[in-house]
Amino acid sequence: MFIDFLKDYLSIIIFLFIALVLSTGFIFINFICSPKNPDPEKLSAYECGFEAFSDSRMEFDIRFYLVAILFIIFDLEIAFLFPWAISLGKIGAIGFYSMMIFLLILTIGFIYEWKKGALDWE
Image (cartoon, rainbow, N blue to C red):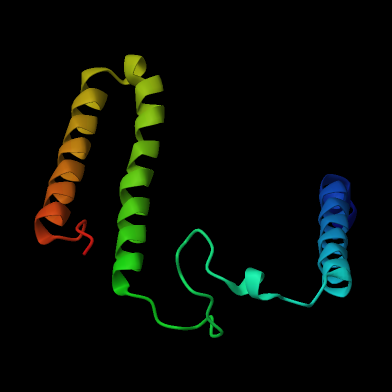
């Protein structure tokens, strides 16, 4: 039983072990060799416009999370359109109308979010 397992999965186990050793080694080497002398230029605000802050656990506005979640929701729905478009010839009219219902529900959700002001940035 164990021999059969090793025959099938030994190469994967070796690959995972090598990947773990290499990634841990690279992180350790980077920690040891990296310079630790930040200058004011490194600590200045970069393209994002935020000033550098010392506490990484500071609270952000809930709108950041809301916009991120809405982006993920509406962006992932687009991923459902690709398999549908490829297999549309095989699934016929039932597949077409089921996707139209799906898109209608998605559009209603988008309009709801728009009317509630979740997409407004002040």
